[in-house]
Image: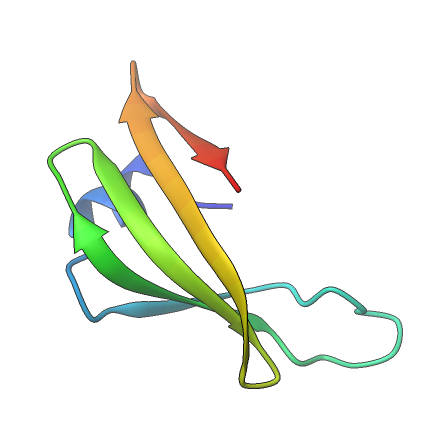
Length: 69
């Protein structure tokens, strides 16, 4: 979902889009907004159709990005 290069380029306030939850029905993307940033971790607020779904956490380790929902 997120490459290491993309991860390194994100800063607080940036938004990225990902495939939505119901792609057969709508093309509406998930929107991930960076609200917290560390050297090897990023915290996102995730919205879908303008509704906040929650917070996601991405961390970088050994050349890959892992996610915690």
